[in-house]
Image (cartoon, rainbow, N blue to C red; front, side, top):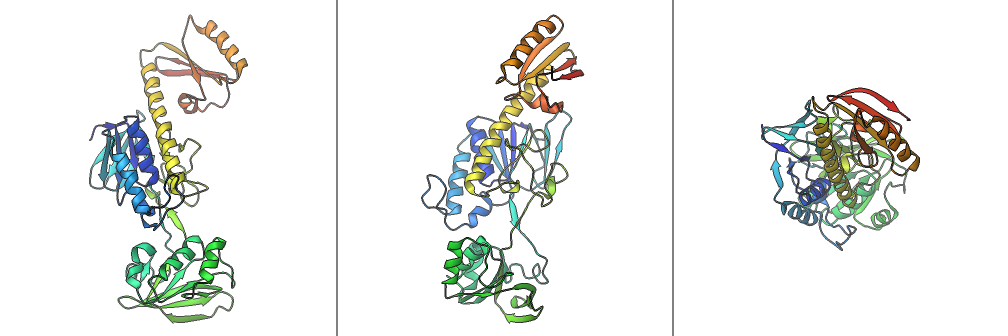
Length: 391
């Protein structure tokens, strides 16, 4: 078993790397575990023009800068392996199990597991993956030079990538579920696609089957209005039909929505104290590098405060700590401060009284599942005796 880390970050996407930068700046002993390439899916992005301070860069180029920055801190370590599970120990720390590197201990964990392409389960999709079935235009476009290919999807990614693919393929046909002229992408991308002579459309249709021997040779396309199917010759098919979160190994540990995205609050806390989730694997309104970087900064800062507060509480609530009273309050309510002052005077002779500003010290308050302030929790030798809310 390895030594204890202040924080273990699982996933080296923009959020994970940003978190490592903040953790490194705070001189926390940090381990970042990544199973693939640092930066994640943004490495497939050809050009980024909306990250503040970066007029233009490739996704891979920007992530190289993130990684270099994170590596500049001596307290940061980086390991390549796959995390297979996480366990919470009785003392509140965590054991991170990996496939090849053994186990690691951490005071807190940040999850930046990202997303992966959605698999539709169409006959032939899995069998021909890498042999004519593709999910990344940047990765695989050059393999289709001068060929006729198809794209499934009508959102921003599908239409923008179809336009990119015309730099290589002789013809790109987009299979669209909607009626003619209706795309799910932004207007600029739609107009560009409509005016690209290499892009064609098959409307009111869906992909039914992928056929071939060693490589993709043809597709069976079904018209959803007439229910008629037709087989067309094709050299390849690109799927751009959405993403799914890579949260399988934690879905029984932290709360997720029905799609598998991890639920977090404004501090990026999950329902498990000490575990945070950041980036594309969370329920978030916008999935961009700038929002992921912000997630990493928030979680790194929140987790630092969590670990510090946990150590303080553990140091106070020992088996021989005697009588301790925690008084919880909101400092922005003067009436609550008056109540606490009187409580301190009343309890001072019997209890060691500790004030807890819940706007900055909420760990014990949340651990006790309290909902109102001012409130008090009474302990004797580390064990809770009683709780009083709404004093």
